[in-house]
Image (cartoon, rainbow, N blue to C red):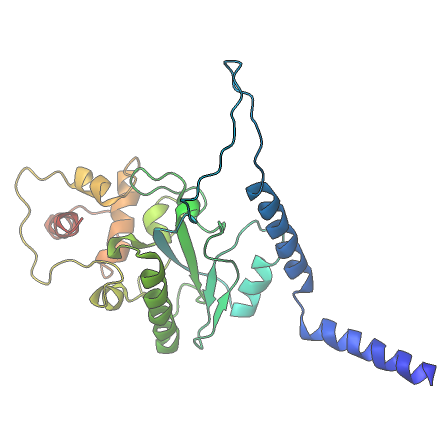
Length: 267
């Protein structure tokens, strides 16, 4: 009788392992959460440079810090399974809060309040640590194919929830290429930013562009919008990848200047 029972237990263990191929990453995730919990619970006196020590007296008025940006990416990989695998390995040092498949599947990989590693070396306005202030959403797309309607529908539903939960301003829903114009080109020019903006997930230029004043400084306008213009050519290209998707280049012509002015006025 003991041998059949042994085989049964062994089979259950094997089945359990097979049913959860991400046991290792789940274990690591929980371990890190426990470390965060321990750090948040500390109430220690800290020595200061002037010889004083801090003292701890707990307030009753606090809550969690909330994300204030949403950054949209495409994965540049061949499948959602490949991206999930990448995000569950230590070596790549990259992650996102959500991954949305071509079929509309939505996978959450990190609590919204925790800091994902999705933005890299990036800035927006005076914010030099985008990862600490944002939720990262990766769309399963290799960068050359259209985004499926199922995927966009799921994205819109997710954005509806996140915008409501955290009161994220429409203009703070932006692209990876916006925050890292010298490094990134995602999501591609095929991404339907206007569809999002029509539902107040982002902003869009006026249908009829107003002519910018003669003294309007386009570079200053880009900086006020949020772009890092140290490499002005890259900033212009990133702006056009988002707002003038049929003309993605660094040409600062009248149409581009008027479009920058239109977005600038909406800040």
